[in-house]
Figure 1: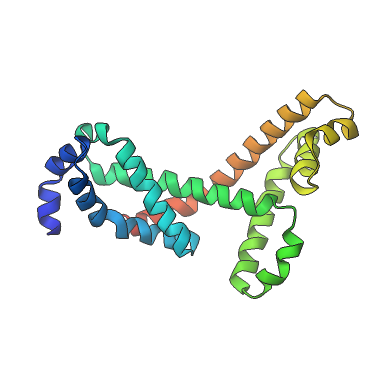
Figure 2: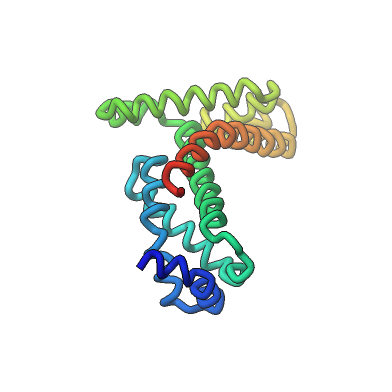
Length: 197
């Protein structure tokens, strides 16, 4: 079956490009376990791994018109999966790091040594990212994301315009995400090599 699919992959991709749902299902069935394994390895969560599989194949379906021009589908799919996982990990890390109520969740996290280690690593990465920010951006980010203050409050407290607060926050978020993405990129690249050969 696998050899047959790979032998006819170009025809299959052409059918998917034409909107053939059955052909898409065949493609999905052939590659889903590899994507799922990658997602599980990186997130340690069945739910997130399933979401990653759905996201990757949603992107395949959305870009189905391009499939006829793809020479190496496996490489193309690997790149889509890598980017999707990077986005998930980055968003997950930023979400976990920026949460104002980390201390409230400490009891729940204490049940899992692994979760505590991951949380500590996320905090360390966030701290490193914050240290790289210019002082004003850092202060705005901390007041917004960690102290939970509204942008208007931050503007008053820092005696700067609301526009400036928004710009500082936007620049700080971008820098933090980029830094976290760079740190995560190495892990994702290694996992992709392991699971999507």
